[in-house]
Image (spheres, rainbow, N blue to C red):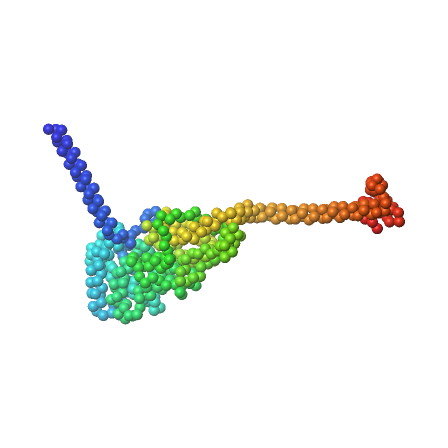
Length: 460
């Protein structure tokens, strides 16, 4: 009887465990069918590298930073923006916006991961309030009128721009589109949402300012404003094969030693494109000395650049001042280099946009002539002392070569004169024995009063 109870308990435990695992399996199936949240808190590993790059400083957008105490003062400013915005619109506009957002509330909640607990009413109010603020703020910037009720308006404006691009400080893009349809389009029917928010995004871009006039944002984005920036900078022709091997990354110094030259990419239609160009001769003759040119995106590094890049990296996560590839306006090149080196810590490269170009560079650097050139530069041109030693060696070699040439010329001339002398003596009837005797004496007076110097072999 006791053995039967033990067996029954064991079977119950097994059955309960199997049911728990089946429940987990069903939950995994449901989660797989759902779209992945696009707005989430940044992983601690990335936040620890630069906490200030992810925390809003003035305004909270969406639920993730709604309860931050330092952001509560700006809630009154958002209420003023809402009041001014609705004054431009018919009375029924607010009700239409609330109804539209309320109908999409489940879709909105699916866009957030780790969201603080807000009921549907609070979340709907938050979406409408924040959406109206973003649209009205962008509209005021577009028409050239902004006013903030504080004594430090310029700094606050700068912080607002950056806060709108933080990965944790976003609302879904479709919410902006829905509110835009009921508001801005009512008095600006020809305007698009991307045209409205363009001034904000372009003021915080890291692209070359000279290329911004022709740079076009994509028409829409499935995620949020930061996703729009990411999608606009993404290469249109990007098509990386899955499971492609990323080649070894060669440093700029290694590429320069191998003979690769650099130039900025001035194509405004695709400012983030990278292209490796070979001369026609080097393409036809791979063994030749033809140097390739790497055309690279121009990056303007400013104080705000780190915030944009870190948030783009966090969102995606799932060097060259002299060549004018990096337009550095920070205090020093060292500061810019340190920022770029640290920007990708704690991240893993899965899809590499420039894989094809890097494959070509890797193949070129492993070629015979580039490897020889790189070896010579590394050995003889790595520091001033080795360059001085190389120059001194070249000068000494040239002097020795010149001395050898003159010595050989003297020997040749002497030999020719001796041969002429012997021919002359034999022509006068001298025997071989007498010629050798004369040569042994070193000098002699020939018949016919021709003085001869046997040391030089000259007949005067």
